[in-house]
Image (cartoon, rainbow, N blue to C red):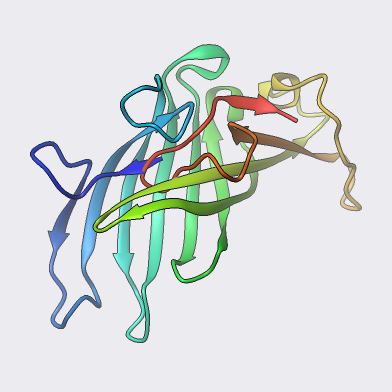
Length: 184
């Protein structure tokens, strides 16, 4: 994911200015998701669309609410809804998957993301998305990665699916998603 604040064509724009140095500042985003960490040499496979707000008075902690909107390939038109706390000082952050549409209808799970590059004020973040769905509900999420290994949970028929961009931590997204969606 490529979060571009600078330049003439930003993908993240401040819409609310908080009362102090940064607490309360809110940005709207329409960040490109690409197959690699390169924002220019890699094809766009989707967008991260939503908001993030500086929600801590004691550090660079964001409240994120956004949709991963896939625009190409097998998952074209499907979305994954993400919400949670992003402590940007942490190496790896975990946010919740709270739903989805299309092949990810009724999905739940989590996203692990790691800042791959930070060139103030722009960032590139790598996303690893883990989805769970009821294996007996007939939704397309279960069939999306039929050959991928799954883990049964103790809660019954739920199964976890891993989707990642590029499949390697060193590629990146937080301003740009790196890698193609693959099951592993």
